[in-house]
Image (cartoon, rainbow, N blue to C red; front, side, top):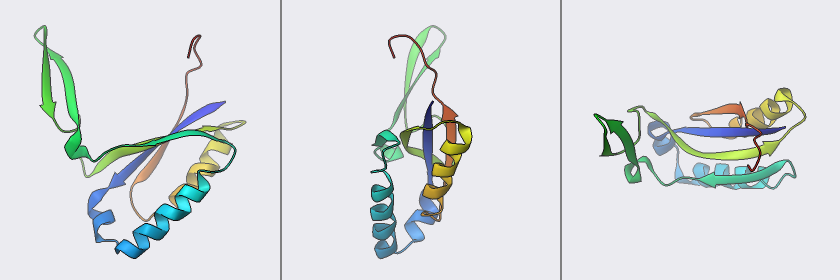
Length: 115
């Protein structure tokens, strides 16, 4: 089964972490992403680059920034293959142990024709 690991960051905690430690964390995570069960991953630009599209009163409304105002924001996602949820959770726990901020949400990917 395919699972999406949605990576949430807390910019306040991340920014308080010394740059040397952040560089080490990034290197460790990049190594973990080389595992054969990782089938894809994307890192997103910062929330300041986001634009949200909504539909209100029959018209599109564009606003700067993410959909929700929160200290945690979606920073990217990783797609993994795992036999079951426990396998995907184990990999998420391995990644989260490398970083002292944020959270990782694990969701099964919907298997649909043409996807």
